[in-house]
Length: 411
Image (cartoon, rainbow, N blue to C red; front, side, top):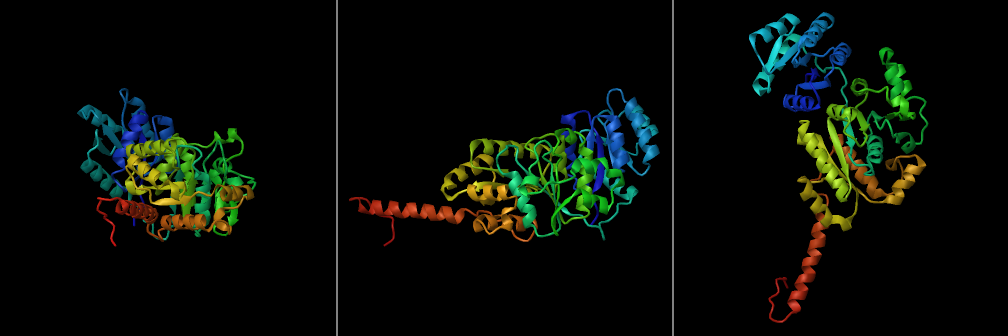
């Protein structure tokens, strides 16, 4: 199986970036590793990543874009420059050719033209294969509303996967994984970023905290100022390094849609969208799903997880599912005291003997994410059927007692 083709994009703003991502998401061989509206940042990203291709959409005054093309051609001749043009006039095409462009796309992008361009990039670039090279699965745990338990689920998911796993705390302004695991990290992702040019396996391992032979933590910096050193390109680079060394990389994300969060979600193979049974969480989840669609994520990439569920909430659950327009196949039961106790002890719940129900649910979620179990389409159905069956039986008995009313209950 071939590796994805890394692409870098020069955009003209956030709306342009989202539009490009949505169009490119339809071509599964492409992975966007960086996007910016700044030519200097795009040049730095190209030098760092040496991508298979860079897409450039020239602005009204294209001279800085042509300069960028010439710089890329000189420093990274193996990178294919693709110009995406609204105005495909002969003069503009000629200028782009002189600057070093080798492929062209008309805007808006046509799926057939994109496929043809990608085929040429693959042929010219000589895509490497994954043979003999590890490429771990990246799972992002996310909620755009605080208080839903994303950090708790991320920690326990990582501990329950039972495969070589790296847990990355990307809550750069409000870290918590060090507390959940009861550790005091000497280093953080900010230290890794500052030393990324000289990283080898030994140095990388030194920046991680080993919780067990199969689980290591890359902590967030405790000082808020240090978090400012971590940029989107650093996050992509870190994820790539980790997925080459671990079977799973679990990302604990902040409750925002900032550049680092979107970049992390882009890199994820799977997103666990966490919510609870309240209107604020449901509305936040609905908004997140809408943004995921705008970003071009497939339905298969997102897995809904309902945290703090209890049997008395079945009817509310049906309302939430109807509101979201999605089934919620994954449930973590409500046991506040036990969960808080595990957090206070600094030990993942799945590693204790407490609350067998929640432990089983967390391990099942890990098995589903690890591809060792199929998701249950309706895990609450038996409970609901039992509840409705009881109501029907009681109603049948009452109807049978009323004179002149025919009972529908079987004898």
